Structures are given as C-alpha cells and as structure tokens.
Amino acid sequence: MRYRVKSGSFLRRVGFAAAALGATGAMAQEDVAGQQTVITAAHMLDVQSGKTIDYPAIFVGADGRITNIADARTVRWGEGVKHIDLGDRTLLPGLIDMHVHLDGPADIGGYRGLEFTDSFWGMTAVKNARDMLDAGFTTVRNVGSDNRNDIGLKQAIDAGYAVGPRIVPAGYALGATGGHCDSTFLPPSLEKADGKEEGIGDTPDELRYQVRRQRKYGAEVIKVCATGGVFSRNTEPGQLQVPENELRAIADEAHQWGLRVAAHAHGAAGIRTAIAAGIDTIEHASLVDDEGIRMAVTRKRPVWFGMDIYNTEYTQAEGAKNGVLEDNLRKDREIAQIQRDNFRKAHRAGVRMVFASDAGVMPHGDVGKQFRVMVEYGMTPMQAIQAATKNAAEALGREGDVGAIAVGRYADIVAVDGDPLANIRELESVDAVLKGGVLVKGE
Ligand SMILES: [Zn+2]
Image 1 (spheres, helix red, strand yellow):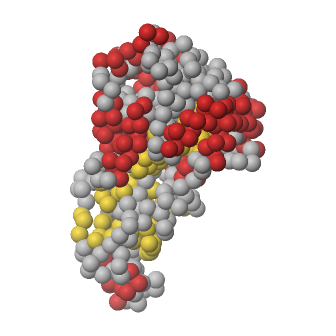
Image 2 (cartoon, rainbow, N blue to C red):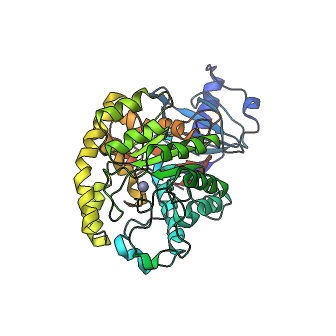
Image 3 (spheres, protein in one colour):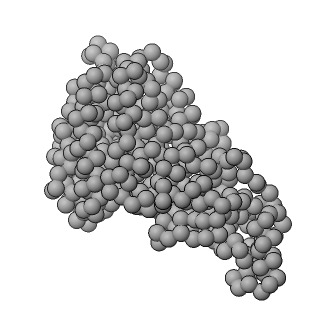
C-alpha cells in the first residue's frame, strides 16, 4: 500500500475548519514556521506513559528531530510544510534491536562460511540492514563484527551510500583464547601468523588494550563473550570463560571512556560474575539463577537483560539445511525452553528487559516475530514494545535521540494497520517506516 505524501491534505483542511469554528488548541501558523514535515495518523503509542494518543500531528524539523506534537484535529500549518498522512494507522516509535549481527547471513552456517571471501560478509550486511529497517527497526546495536563491517556500514549509511538503521557498533567482540568469540572452527595450522585474533585477550591488561583499540576505531559499545555459546565449537553455554577480574577491567576501561559493555552470558555463573564486574547488559541470560536475577534487580548501576527467545524456532527448522553442525543444534535445543522460562521469571521479578533478537542467527527481516514470544512468556504487548523502544534507549544511553515519539528525539516512527496492543503480531509486518522524519518504507 502506498501513502500520500503532499503538502495539502484532508487533515489540514479539517484543521482549518476546526480553527474557523473556534476550536481550542489550534496553533497559530507562525508557531510552526520553519518546520519541514508533519506526520499524522489516527493513533500513536506514547511508550513513556503507556497511553494511546488519538490524532497526533508530529512536526519534524530540518534535522530530523521532533519539534512539536499537536492535535491533528485542531492544529494548522503552512503550505510549505510537507504532510505525510498515515491515515487510520497506529504510530509507534521506531524499534530498537539491542543484539544483531548485520554481517551474519542467517542461511550460511558452520563450515559453509569458508566458501566466501573476507569482504563478502560486509556486503551481505548492506541488505540485512535494509531488511531490518523495513521490519521497523530504526536503531540496532551490532554486538560483534569481524573486519569492523559494522563500523564501515554505519559510516556508509550516515553518508548516504546505503539505507539502513542507526547503528551502534561494537567492532570486534572481546573474549578469551578458545572462547566463544575466538575463531573456533579452524586447526592451528590455519591460525593467524601473528598470534591472537583481534579482540582476544587473556589478562586484564590485554583486554583493556582491546577496549581502547575497539573504541579508537569507532566502537560505541564494547562486547565481551563471558561464557561459552551455542554457535562456536568446543565451548559450552554454561561455562565461564572470562574471570571476574578480567571482566571488571573491561567494564572499568569502557566506562572510563563513556562506553557501555554487553556481555554474552548464557550460564548462571557467567551472568552473576558479569553483573558483579559492572557489565551493563547481559546478552542471552539463558540459564540465569535466582541469585543472578536478584543481582540484576538490586544493582545500583542499572543492568538490562536482552533475551533472544524467538530464534530457536528458526535454528531448529532451518539450521541443519544451512550447514549448522549437529553439536550446535544440540546446544540450542538444550537451552531454548529454559531460556524462555527464565525470561518469564526475570521479567516477573522486575529485571529491566530489552528487545534482543541475535539477528544473523535468524533472518534480519523476521526479528519482529520475537514480540509474539515475549508476550507468550509474560509481557503485555505494551511491555514488549517498551522493551524495544523506551528500555532499549535507556540501555543505550540514547534517551535524547531514540526510543519514543517525543519532542527532541529523532522522528523514527513505525506505522501499523491494526492495534498492536490487541494483536502484537501487527509488528511482524509493519506498513510504513520513517527515519528522521523521512519515509523509508511505505511510499
Ligand atoms: Zn550474538
């Protein structure tokens, strides 16, 4: 379906009529002078108050940020303002995925990766980024990327060479030799001649250096693999791989530079250790125990959980066909249901939750399917939406920019046909997407 984008409109005429009849709340034309775009629709979710607002008129300045939100039934604007009318749809803030791998095509698993040259992965990221934007995700945190593909893509998008979400890149993920974020699929004869893979460190000092190095070349968040994982070889999800003093060195160093740290942690010991060390977001959190939940809730420095509770459905259905090894499928099977049950438990206990899909493990365009599972496992639709907007923006430290339709923030907006609070699956196929007040899908 296409949308009308034009400077005159039905709603504006209604606005003039209402003003002529003396309706209150009408805005003098000069008040909106200099504004570039106005976006209208039947409803808007205010994720900060949890309320639905009818007939919003969202004004956007030349810098792509929201300058004013008024009542579309009474406000008026000048001829020079571009009007994007999204009709009887419901608007919500552009969605935020806190755990993606844009340079990881979901359909290439295991040793099939060796069929491709090194620059292939960055090329796939261009399409994956577009798919995520079309799925309504206007901001993504890319937690680990070889070759700094995430940083290069972010620069290309910001400079207009590609179309995609706002990217918060990590560069290379940090971790232990032989750990989940090391290269674990090759024999020693194929190791890098100069020793360690980038990101890998085995002492606090080596890992501090890796934090500094990632930041130096563009990382805006630091990722560390604190435990084993599902898709590496010879690691187990429950296994702690980076001790507390090394995690603390990473957290302290990152915080000194103003960066936050995301720790991949499946196992209960790894989760507790990461929280104790000052890590900001716990990725996966699959096997968390009661003490880990208690620590996450009571810690003075806020801790968020990003639990990827949809992708097992894709992995179990398509993984073998994509080349994923049986041992990796086995690990996924072993933790999938426990992770979903622990999602319910952590949410119920009051842990701050963010939306995190691990896209790359699953197709980037399908990440909206996770909302259904989040609701199935205990969230209200509004809470699931807040996890992908308000909470995620807080966990990024970007509340001034993204995560709500509010004055001062970017006009990153998604429109859906139905009522997402009545049917969360509306978010599996969004109808229109705006980034910075510009329609990027739906016209
Ligand atoms: Zn991941």
